[in-house]
Image (cartoon, rainbow, N blue to C red; front, side, top):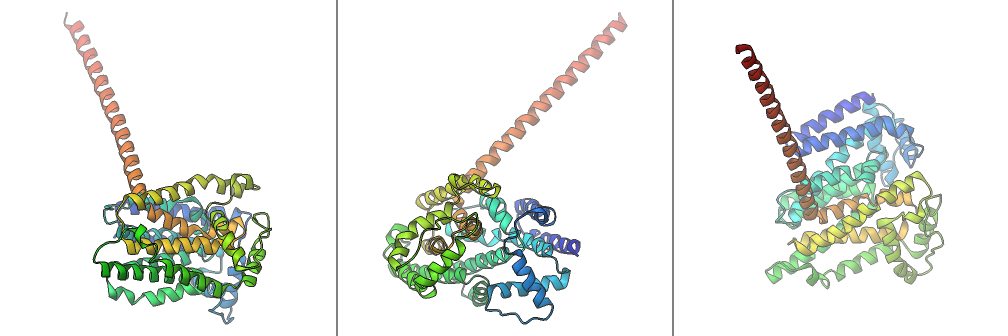
Length: 415
């Protein structure tokens, strides 16, 4: 039945790719092949199990007739997983195969958001390639868990909100509530972050309308203070200090734990810890933390994370951006990095949870990525042209040499 799932996924991708660019067809096809290879061949041999058994057990129970608790994120996703099991068989590999398709769909709404963020941006080819092949999101979006689906729904909701707020397409608000509920059921924190970001974008849109002009990002600092206050109030309501500390201690277990001795006894401790824990969430593990092959692979991706932060900052400073969309993305990114950072205390969980925020950094750095992509493409085309011209010149020289030899032989025969 895994074979049937593979065929269904390939056909679905072919139908989607028909209406997209040639680059998406080629690059997305290669990425999908990589996801399928990872799902069918590699993952069954990997010694890590993450939360795969947790979701599989819940899905099998639902398939057997158990009543799911849809307010539980595990049961909410396991219900979707059970539907796939009913169609293709109760095998986690089936879910990994479908997740491969979802993973190659994730770049589509994000590329739209990037084009709306930067009006001068004519192409998002560079961003597309980065989103398709960034290493750890590539891995974790294939795993038979909820990451691929929750990320796709979250970025689709982002794109819908941008279309409504920035483009004024009010009819696109119709699917927003259903999308928000779906994201909330899978990852309530992402749904609340997007709601907070949408509030910030609406506030900027109102200020911009009153001013009658585009407002630079640096001038919007005061306007976003209410968003920060609302975010802190929401976070403190969801996670009282005792509950927050309990979550941190629960996650600070295993070989990949970090900052194990850090405790929260008051909100002052939380505020003081926020910058350090946000940095850990965005960049950890660091070279001195390597204890396994997984940690080593994560450290090797550290330069890529640093590069994304730098190019996102450079792009926002150098390229004209839509202030409402920029504030939307920055609120979601900043709130997510700080919020998740205050709770996550294990490298494996941290790397998995930050995938969507890595994607947002790539969107913010889209102009630089596009510039790099064009330079690389130009270099490769020139190299291929030079190689082709060299082959043609060599072939012409060989023909001349061969022709000269025949003529010389002919002269010898006529003497």
